[in-house]
Length: 321
Image (tube, rainbow, N blue to C red):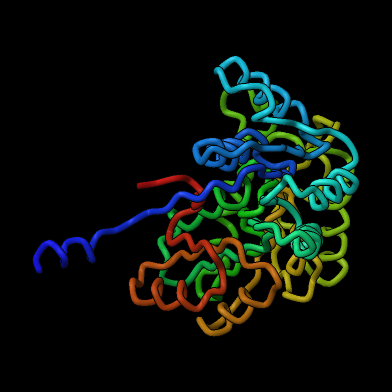
């Protein structure tokens, strides 16, 4: 009987080979995303087809070349370049591709999920974000400023987990605004390979124009410019780190992902109001909380409809454990 009980309580892990996996990638973190997705696929014995973003294609080619140098057989790691829509349709229609994994916009993710149904492909999606960063009255001001700075301006605000809306409770709003603006003003903008540089350029001119349109919309509806809100003197696609105050939840910058170095500050009164504003979006990827109240941190974390919640921490997508 004892041996039977031991047998019944064993943990059995089945590793199922999916065969060919198609990987469509957004512009952000081109090397990191390939490692996160291609590595496990290869470990499970699968081959992969990578369709990189047309904005960051060269890293995919370099990674494929390195895989050959490392001894991975030809045909195991494949890279396809060209029209994203046409390639996506071909991968969806292929009977050889058994799984689609995609990081990018919600709109494209929906199309891939619908298209995968015809051949019953497995689908893994990491879609757009509209991350709220909630700063409560009881937060440590220095911790909140440092954490929000990291959450907002990493990679020049061009990640799907970047803080897109900074909700600050009214009791600490003015102090936070001033301290945060001072920290942002001290950020060095320039070549990312230069020591001390904290922010580089935006990916292209279209990204700059999108940032400008979001800021113009906010200002036209009553938002105030605390800092920045203009192109950087370096030219090209550099944009000044920007802080806006008196932002309302109906402004474009609070409704959609800006994907740039713009920090909109929204004011709230109560915990319930903060949760309501934070959850008022169709995106649910990442969120941030700053508070010294343990009970509140658990309560709000559970109420937020997001897959990732950082508590007193601005960098939440790093691997631990």
